Image (cartoon, rainbow, N blue to C red; front, side):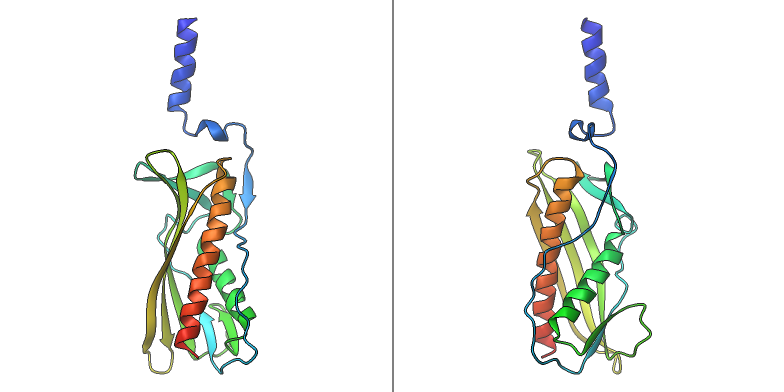
Length: 198
């Protein structure tokens, strides 16, 4: 009996995933933040292109990443339906277009002419575990707004958000916190960019 208990304990200690995930099935999650941004009745004449979002290779994957004891690891039973940089670009483009502050907001793949380009770099997009076992979603992205004609950098800012993970049911809880943190960053971006270009 002792040897059976010892074997079970050893198996739990050295298994690659947490106990909370053992009953979960693989699932694709979509980043879908709830956004309600201020809408403008009159737009300016700028056409803004949101460039492809640059990111470290570890964040440019569909894995839902968490950082524990300094190491970045993927959830075994949850992945993103799209890579975070690709989804973030779409979310930013749609949110700024829906505000009607700019004449038009286009994605980096568009062939339409534009006078401004927003250059984002995704620096952090992971769940971070604290020593006490609790965790938070950490989203951090740097933006540069550049005028095409002159090449002038009109502004640069780093926007971050940390949101506690309250649902500990595998990757689902992390996704909920990522949605709230992502909404925060996009709201902050809209305030910043709309302040630069009146």
